[in-house]
Amino acid sequence: MTKLVNWTENPDEIVLEEVKLFHLESMNERSLWVGVYTQDDKIYHLNIHADGDRLKYYWSDETV
Image 1 (cartoon, rainbow, N blue to C red):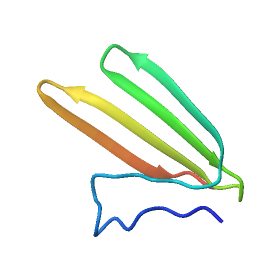
Image 2 (cartoon, helix red, strand yellow; image 1 turned 30 degrees about the vertical axis):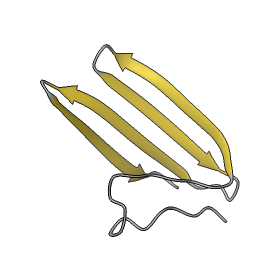
Image 3 (spheres, rainbow, N blue to C red; image 1 turned 45 degrees about the vertical axis):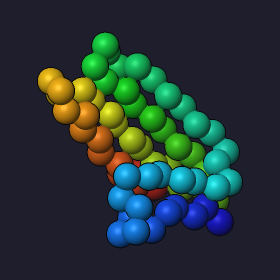
């Protein structure tokens, strides 16, 4: 079973165990997309974007 860190204790970390596939793609010079596929068939997406001097990220559960 995939475990994520507790977001209320560590909101600046994403730690996954039992990852089947990690897919990182550069969308452009300011954006990265990450697909995480786990051994228990969960799918997560992480989008990272540089907006001026700020770094924004969005984590979503895309499991069907």
